[in-house]
Image (cartoon, rainbow, N blue to C red; front, side):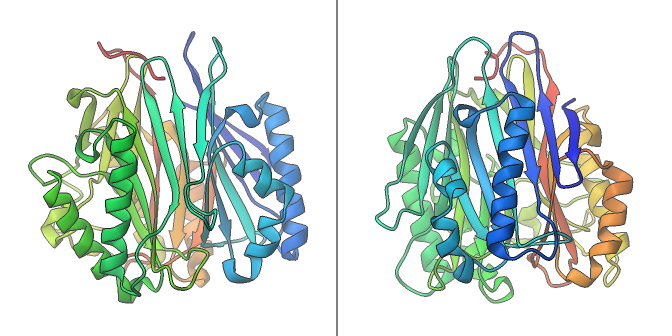
Length: 394
């Protein structure tokens, strides 16, 4: 299980380590409530530097970071001019999304770090678009390569279907240029949709059609995913996508996570993502938990109108998914919790603290979930030791 540490009330981290293996660390950072954006950005910068120092990490160990903004159109200029943005942009795949942090200041952060005791982590970073927002990072290990793509947008038409199709066509091209394909190597996506209640269906239809055309079906597999309200840097961009693909995997290393006693297959209601994916390595397994809400085995929303009971059911569903792989909530390396209505935050937070504890890196966000009746959603990753015939991680 990852070792979790609370540095202070706004800084949490988890680290998974095995003998002679690569260390994986997740850091969640928030800022004081009531600060202006420049003040909060300065505080976040200081907290990030302090956390890296505390954990003996550096810019060379950073591979992925997501910054959560409360008002991207008014905050992006200050962010782009900041030392933190330029530091992260030069060191890792950097995702930036408007999703309002809850119970803290106007900006928060989640970062992922890899530290190999045998040699420095080899990274290749590119910024292929003229606007500078999309960026791709390849981490080249001895056994596997990780491809992160962040802020992936596409399409010129103001239409969620068209933009989603263009994004997946572009993403697939990036994956193929790296010697991979979507079916064998695609693992995880985060799909952000502006005005989710109006545009979600267009995104879902385009993704379903694109996956079917590329061999991703309910008979093969889909990707782990979160589809959630989120806004990118431009009002014209309805959809944006972050993704992870892994090169070097055998088909047997990727395992569908299902808990049919608790959650229906997503295809039951026409959506094409896995509830979770386990990726097995020789020394550990990554358990990618997709966006999980208060749903039952028939695909129905449970506890409509009650945020506390929905949170308990969502956690029960995550627990059920983990148990199928001999894992527990204690194995979670980070959690992102989304609440639709900020006035439900205390009910949700109380249950999260009770069930997850106060040490797991946690990002708490205000964002609408794909069905209006869902008041909250969870996602994250668990890491557990493994002994398999496959090469060790990285």
